[in-house]
Length: 80
Image 1 (cartoon, rainbow, N blue to C red):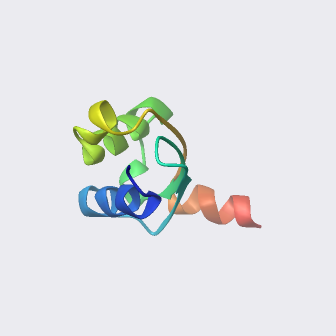
Image 2 (image 1 turned 90 degrees about the vertical axis):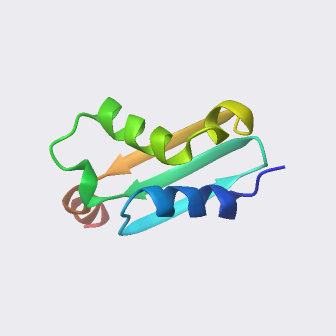
Image 3 (image 1 turned 180 degrees about the horizontal axis):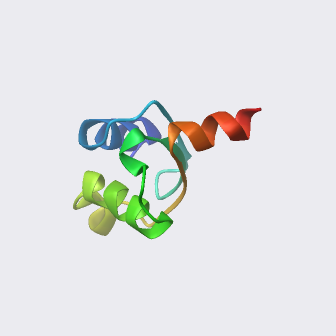
C-alpha cells in the first residue's frame, strides 16, 4: 500500500513545490500542489507535470489522484 507521504515525496523530488498537501487511503489520493513551474501552463499541462513526477506509480500503485494545482500567485489569491 502506498502512503500519502510517499506520494508527496515523489512529487517533491520531481517538481519544485512551495506548498504540497497529499491525503488518501492507499489507493485514492487528493493533492493540493503549488508550484512556480505551473506558471504559463494550462491546467492539463500542470497535471501532466505532476504525472511525470510520479512516473510508474500512477500506473502501478495509484488508482486515482484528484489534484488541485496552483501557481504561487493563484494560491496567495485563493488564501485572501
